[in-house]
Image (cartoon, rainbow, N blue to C red; front, side, top):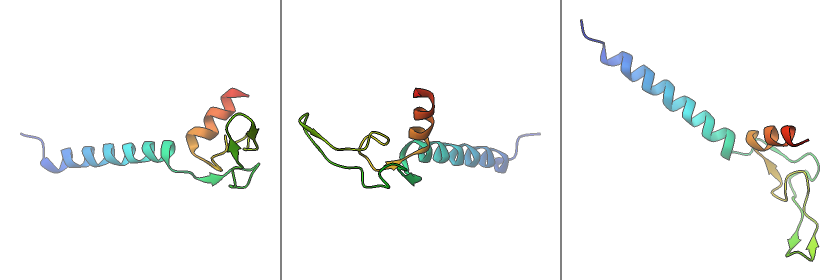
Length: 73
């Protein structure tokens, strides 16, 4: 007996969903920074740096950012 074409489709669909979840963890901000509340601050060269140290001035955090900061402590 040969494998059903539907079975291969389900595996590929599961792989695509997993890949999309992984991409979202790295790219999509899920919350604003607790320190700056999403504002981020300003940075003008090396002379003036009023950006948030918690989020690096981005104002938003992804799952990757949150996990990375936990290991840096």
